[in-house]
Image (cartoon, rainbow, N blue to C red; front, side, top):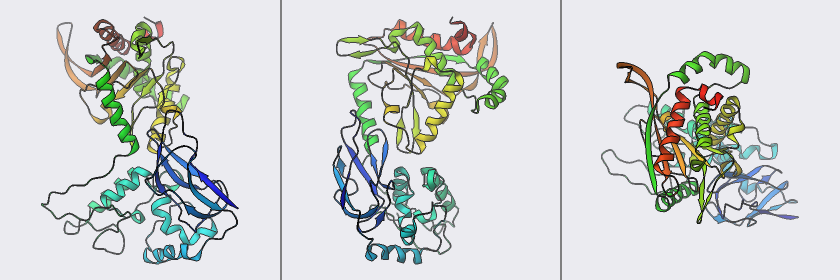
Length: 430
């Protein structure tokens, strides 16, 4: 029986998607629920499992194709048998690559002879595959540490670090037992070695997520009247509170006590005082949100994503820290869902983790404001006529001047500052 493989129903906010990379070739056997291909949308990467056991009889849409919901992209023959021709290249590749890592998950016996050749596709996340292609890294030299033995972008970076320790006269040699003149390219688009002193250029297509990010940023700046107000906050009280309870907090709740939880609590505290900052524009209407869904900007191998803390006002500090930690881990594995990346009434962007001192964040439409958090550094400040050293963090709040006037913008940022400098205010609702 021939079974069609279709693109799953995409969310309403996602019009189309891109086929990233087929993990199987026509003629190879597949198992039910085995991942056939990664499908990239402008928000997440989806895995499409095989609907039945059988043989992949036909691929109707190739890598890189743009698809929509319910498009037929392949056909599985449930009564077929894997062709010997489909396995022969893999066997040859296995004989030529004795150093292939063994950290990949075990495959069914019927596919055992194809495992080494499938390593470059099956176990690498999309961002990792792109990085290996751009840097001419042999996938066989990279040990995957991601879920199910998958190769992550960090694994590729580590492998490149190992390669960088090779002698200067052989910069393109791979860290494998057998020396080679040039790393084998895993894709046709992989660049060739560039002679020292040349002026190389490389043209690669934007990922769907990166194109969407670009579109949204331009939309924000062209449709909103963005203005940014700044303030500085003395983090001494938060640091002392954290140092006093961090060990007990981690033992009690099973998660480390970070700083982002305090910023989320302070933001919710301020938004309750100034609800206009938590509002949005819909046509000629101002929509006041009676809930607090706080977006947390997170870096991922695919680009910046903003998962949402739903009803943050009802979450404890421990709940917030657990959710943010989970977001960070799953963002690296491209496991965030569309629902987790949709919506939000206010966003926090923490450039301080990368060492940023000051920035002007761009609003995430249709929201009306965003908080930029930066690196905390010891700086000289004046207290009671004396110059003292305090841990200072510069805060920047960008807002849509169409509905938020300077008064609300400045006072809401002052409320965030005061809540952080005196955390008891959040408990007493002052």
